[in-house]
Image (cartoon, rainbow over all chains, first blue to last red):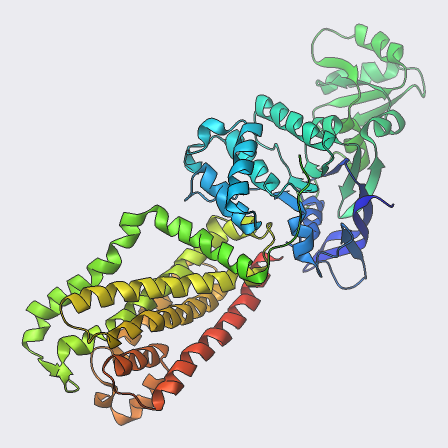
Length: 310
Length: 261
């Protein structure tokens, strides 16, 4: 792809006996948002680290990583000066206050002092942290810390923003604020790559998602297209398993697909009326008829059971 | 957002920016961080002046207070650099994850730790300068030659910073630094010609003292301060530099594996 910002080709990364990333290939187009989905241990964070040389890929089997046309293991500085990184942990300097944290990083990016001050003021406004400019990092709430880390990653006006679980552990207000900011950045031409466990987040933000399982890519595509092509549009959820036998026997043959887990059953169907008919015959409560979501696609692709890495 | 010239900073800037980060954090608590380097030599002077000094007037043909005062800037540099690059580095590495954040900016692991060694040297310089200032006020340091402790304090700080980084690269539990401090640095304080001349050591032990890094820092500083120049001093200076380079090289190689995973 001509305007791909990130290209992974057959990349492997092992930690001792564990293949964290096992032959992954994908590309991220410029000015789009690309999401990596997968359970804990599926290889999402490792892929993020490979982008800015926080990790190094296995020399064998041979694979290549290209970011802005640079191999991070050869030209790490070229990659880093064009990128902003929001790691999973808020690794802010707790010994410094909010604006000092940004100033120290502006220095690391080589931004001249006067321009740095303007940029810091701009970013504190953008991230709605202006009142906290002189607050100690310890006083900040989780949502403020996260916004500060994002502001820090934007100091150098990057072309690529990498976010590892940007909204994990945050309340809905903060999450939606962050989503709005990311949308705004994307509209201005920024390429965004993120990992998330929230399918809603991927659905809201991503133009493209890659679902990983045991270090391998299992599904790739636009979230809305995945939803229309990889899962039945409706699902009847039964949160009381005792309702399952009579529900299933009332379904016309071949009209629905049933998924069992320990304490719930989900009945997927293309025809809304089929599900509606059986749902109406059930006692109220303990069931819910809803459109399918990306989470259903995800669970279908990766399975419902926990695996050893989780 | 306006497009800007996205070019990675040059090496000197990258090292400076890492150094600057440590400087900002250090100067943020100016009183608690800036007072001890002045207080320590004062307490030492008091102890020697009202206690030890009454029993020992001269050492190695100079007033005992002068003998001590020409070693003290180096031990001060040694301790501050060692703390900075052991406990300090470990906390940044393991608890604060500060390096994980910094490494996302255009700096390499090499830049991070060379910058840190330069910072350790700067703290050594500052602490030595404080000792010289206090001691010279009481006439315990020959002037102006005693000022040589300032640059030698830098070299000593950098050397002990690099050595502490090497130790840190092996340490998985922060309590293990106690072995380094009580097992290596504290004995070195006594057996490096700091409080008594190496000549008074048993002949068999003298080569051992020559292995101790502090020995070379103290001899270099004391000899120049007292204008006793000799060729040995070149070897002492070279020792400081070579140990810094070798320990720094090995430390960075090992620490790299803790950061780039």
